[in-house]
Length: 254
Image (cartoon, rainbow, N blue to C red):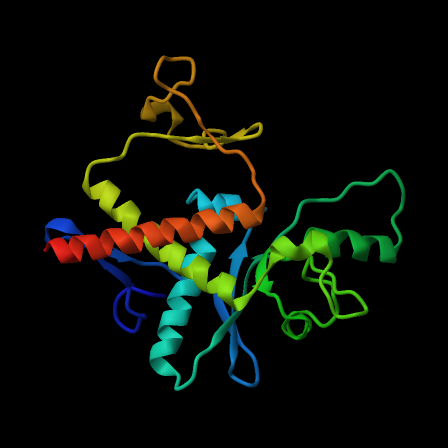
């Protein structure tokens, strides 16, 4: 637990305009460490389905795992005498849907089905040795390694280099602070997204009271168009540079 009271880790704190401070609190389900003490892994337990892609992070839709990773890294930097690297951040499913078949499945079929259903989505370090240390059997991570010790091209979005993790952790820090500033300015208008056929309103419990109706003038979904991860990472770095310049400009003006 961070920011939760006695015995908890400190919250993520941001000094906002007008003397306001934003404290971000939460609970990390699990942090694993390797035997060498060089790497750490953040795991979040889920009872329902969950996935992760860079577009959702870029748009600020899924920041939970990155926030946990950011909190853990900050804590470890203060308590360890050496730098610790993120080995990854993963969702772990605690239950699964019933599987119905039109035939009596063999034990091997059953194992393969549930191995696939319980794969742990997320991102891990782009290091084959680290991936094998996390999942020596190959049953739990949806990542394959070739005989040459390389990642398949289709699995590249699921692995991140240390430099990419650094960029993403800086980005989640930026997004949390920026969101706090927007709330303070009263920017709370509903701007639900649409990604393909899915929208933020599909399972929202507040649909009856938020007032957003796409059939009304002025109510339009924020349409998200998928792009290559390389393009998104470039935009993320650009946003970080603009934010740094904005802060420096504000400091110089002050």
